[in-house]
Image 1 (cartoon, rainbow, N blue to C red):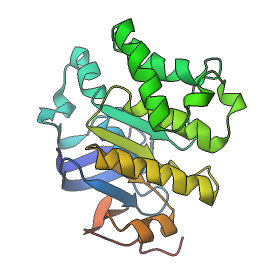
Image 2 (spheres, rainbow, N blue to C red):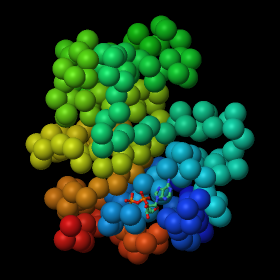
Image 3 (cartoon, rainbow, N blue to C red):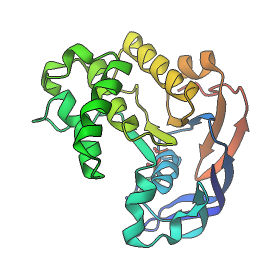
Image 4 (cartoon, rainbow, N blue to C red):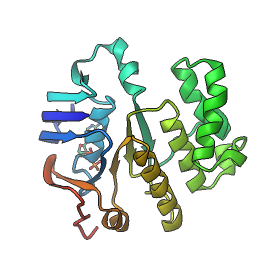
Length: 228
Ligand code: ADP
């Protein structure tokens, strides 16, 4: 469970990115974050995976108050959150297999577990046969599948996805959405920022709209609701 109570984020240049946000996201929800560019969507997500800390207010993730977390405890919270970006962010000199394995090596998972778990998630994302390719030998959709495999390999309870279909054509976008839907069905909370009207309007999940750092709409089975 994720809970924000009156969260404010002001960057050092004085930009008020979030201004008094309160929200609860339950285990197993699928949430779309929508709103204009610069509204505060990425900031909202960065606060959850503790890339940023709030200026004011409280954020708890699975019962941990992450704004107050001691530096040495940050890895424990982070390993419970997988992150997927618009631009994939794979390590270019490593194969698909190695990119996914790396996420397990970072948390010092035993080699025995890495050898069984990595092929399992590559199979789940449909890339079992391309495990030995470098990112440059994979299509955009395939690279995003590797990034999703990397995000889920340590069994996080939450996946944060910042415009994961932003660089993909419609067909690949739908395939990525099917994959995220399947991951959600298996029990992972998904929070996804998007400008993809078609996806939001046909999947009909919870929609949280942010404008100027405020939540202006929060609907179950919501719609995209903008013309951009
Ligand atoms: P969105 O994801 O909805 O496009 P962001 O959360 O990225 O919005 O940005 C919200 C506001 O905060 C914008 O005005 C943006 O320019 C500003 N902002 C984002 N990151 C920083 C930063 N590191 N330093 C200063 N301002 C920032």
